[in-house]
Length: 367
Image 1: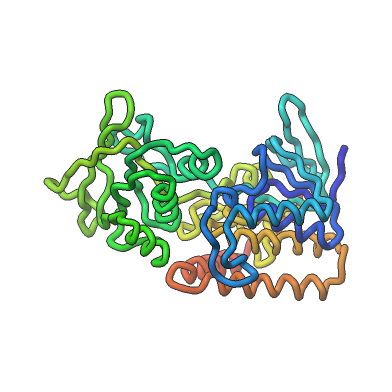
Image 2 (image 1 turned 180 degrees about the vertical axis):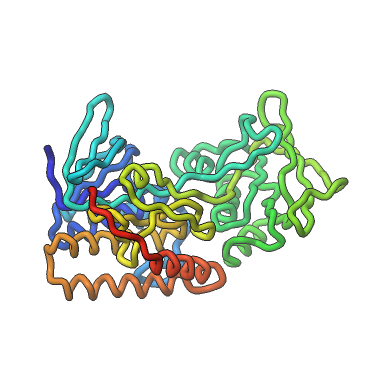
């Protein structure tokens, strides 16, 4: 059996950050990912990140991903792709399969960075071909260079909906409208300004009533919503579109954390059910840490820093480095996370995180 100090499950920004930090401080580190290429959402991000130097301001997402992969390789992180984990058992035993082959690993500490899954909406016609998620659109356009349609309606004005709309325009699609149920835009003003300058209208207090098509999507019926989020009769209108793109939020992928016995809590601000964790990303299970969207849905920069924090915390648990040295590094990351969560959107997440950390959860040690 292959034995490691740290096993990281999930190769997105959080997982890569965790693996890099753990390996940098001397931990024998394994990174497992179910995809054929690590990096997660980073390789779908063709726009430049903004913020501070520590958060790669001015660098495009796919370049950040490439830099992290090179760093992981230089630190001898063991990487296994196309590998789906199916269980974590007492003693730090991780079971997985790759192709038709079952695999087994043993880790002194395990970091779960399994990310999040996309939400969908239910309405008449929601299962028609042509109704897709924003993540599917990004994957097809930015990774595979395939435009899934010509005329788009995008539902959701959060950062994902705004960014995807702009990227669809860049790829040559016509974005007829962004539809938002709330009376205000949900994402950052800088992203909203870009799509507005590109000629995309944003319909606030609107929703999808029905998608119409004989075999594939042909039309989208929209309507206005009142202050109680109820459809207003007589306000329906139709847009001719071949693609309806849903960008209506994410939920943490908690299945593996639940199988591990991690105590789960509910936070609507951070995406729903998620594992409880302390300020160092440790869960109720002594061997298990979490990071990224699994620990609460936020931005890619936040996921990366939470991964770094989890990697350092795992090394601290192992006692591989001087505690003061690791503590100082961890505090720098915590300070950066606090800065990232400033502003009208981040403050809610910061308060939610503080609430989670302050919960008194009994520690368990069956793993």
